[in-house]
Length: 244
Ligand SMILES: NC(=O)c1ccc[n+]([C@@H]2O[C@H](COP(=O)([O-])OP(=O)(O)OC[C@H]3O[C@@H](n4cnc5c(N)ncnc54)[C@H](OP(=O)(O)O)[C@@H]3O)[C@@H](O)[C@H]2O)c1
Figure 1 (spheres, helix red, strand yellow):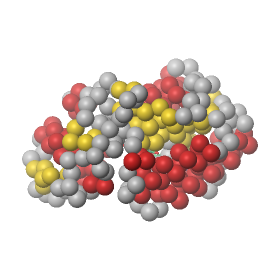
Figure 2 (figure 1 turned 180 degrees about the vertical axis):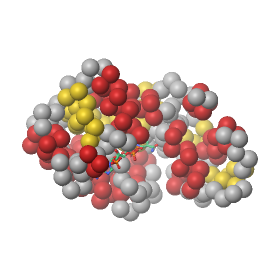
Figure 3 (figure 1 turned 90 degrees about the vertical axis):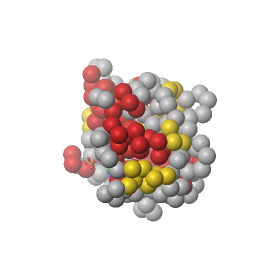
Figure 4 (figure 1 turned 180 degrees about the horizontal axis):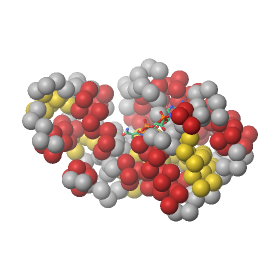
């Protein structure tokens, strides 16, 4: 299959391109650095010419109030170009429980992205994943100083980006789901506990202070980010991943 991967230079996109090409498909990465801009539509018609599938793994440059406009414009451009090019399947990567966190504008933006895809003219699949292990560095940096990291005890079920990329690749070469596949990590952690495990593994002697108002995940209530029945559970554990 010929598969256009928009955002194919990113953390997930670059791994999806590798997996697809290694399994005999023709996956082509696209991004602003290769002349394809989903915000302006520049280079998009050319990128989608002859593609059977388009996988959208772009991300908004910020998680703030600008994120809904990013996902609105990029999805409008993507679907118009995919329809014009006769692409038979559009795939996006969203977040488990995104619709359960209305106080986070970035999560509302991801729900908007899903809604636009569902209402659009192209057969589709939505993959919803939990937080990437790789995302922990950013999470720790938001509320850290030289001595402490403040984190809420929000339950999370993180997973390796490699497992997400495999799931996205599998969905991309299948029939459009016309629905959502949820994927999640094998273990649930309180975020402050996950912070302690991460710092210890890195030999970082800062302490973690539990603070229910700290950072983005303070806006999450209960087990909103935990996978529900029917989710696919990935194999890689956090400690295995840390030890690599
Ligand atoms: N973080 C999490 O834990 C999590 C969990 C579930 C789902 N997700 C979703 O996973 C998706 C991928 O995330 P990621 O971490 O792999 O992203 P990333 O590493 O930041 O990569 C983003 C990609 O999008 C490209 N891009 C940015 N603006 C673009 C534009 N205007 N036109 C075309 N391409 C553009 C970038 O190109 P350049 O390299 O040229 O800048 C890059 O290839 C996101 O949609 C995110 O919401 C994230």
